[in-house]
Image (tube, rainbow, N blue to C red):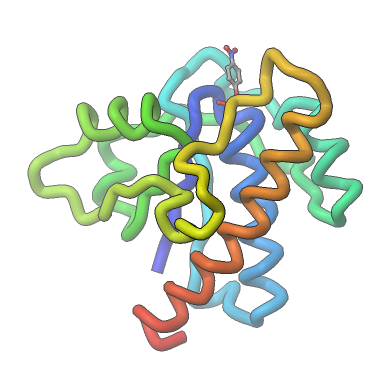
Length: 157
Ligand code: 4NP
C-alpha cells in the first residue's frame, strides 16, 4: 500500500513525516509493503531539499531527510496512492479541490489517526523558532506509530 504526506511547501512538515514514517516502516521490516512519499500543495519550493532546520532537527533524532526533494502534488497522485494525509486544514481543503471524482486515494488529516494527541493540525514551523520544528517531530513520531499500527491491521501486514 502507499501513503503520501502533504503540506504547503514540502520542505518542513511533510518531508519530516516522510522521513520519520519511512524509518518506522523500515524498522518494522515493511519497506516492501508500504511505499512512502511526500508533496506540497504549493509549487514555490519544488526541487529544493527540506529546510535546513527540519533536516537538523530530524538528524538529531536519527532521521536523514537530505535526499528528499520537494514536489507539488498532482491529480495523478490521487490515482497512485491509497492514502493521502494532509498536515493541516488548509492543505486538506486544497487537496479536496484537486481530488478527481474517480480518486483511488482516501484523503484524511494526518493527525486523525491519533485523536488522543488532542491536536488536529501539525502547525507550520516555517516562520517560527526551533521549538516549532521539535513540535513537528513530536507530533509526527507519535502519529506515525499510530498510523503504522492502523495500516498493519487494515492491510494485515
Ligand atoms: P511546510 O512549511 O508547508 O511544512 O513545508 C512551509 C514552507 C514554506 C512556506 C510555508 C510553509 N513558505 O511560505 O514559503
